[in-house]
Length: 205
Image (cartoon, rainbow, N blue to C red; front, side, top):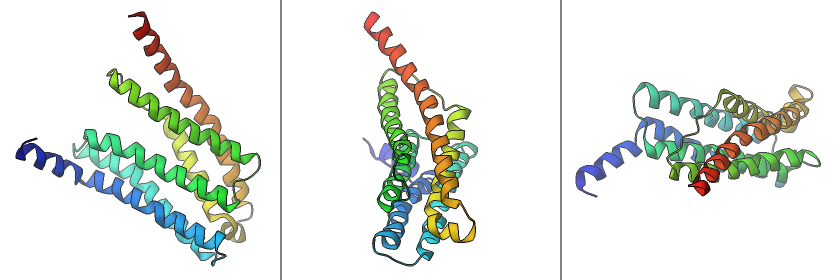
């Protein structure tokens, strides 16, 4: 790689959209740490509000990084790779911490398992389809799924602290998590179907 190419890559990786994605990744240990201290170490309830605030800020960057990348024409292969990774790290970390916290328990664990398994499956399929130079665009339904998923996690992060302000906050979060899991199954099938279709074409060829 020559000097000009190296500078081009560095400039791309430090664009505002990518910096927002880095911020989303940096928010993960803060959210997890707040919930861990509050729940596992019996810390004060205000830590849940702090976790929620940081999580919401991270969720907003998920919209802003794509928005600025489009309007400023700063889309890059690096950004397209990193953005979904940041999303999956944030969602997976929060779900695992909420399970350890006990907010997600019993049958609701299956909703979290479905969401996590789908994310792993889709990541593998995207890598496979990318090798075939096949693009599977994100559908509106998948975007709705992501929105519902983030809202559900937000309610669950508030947890007991939220229940003291608005009754049934936790129950609303659990209900939304189940709805998100159903959307997850449906949208995940679209990727799986595309992967199977192109795999069969490869075998025939």
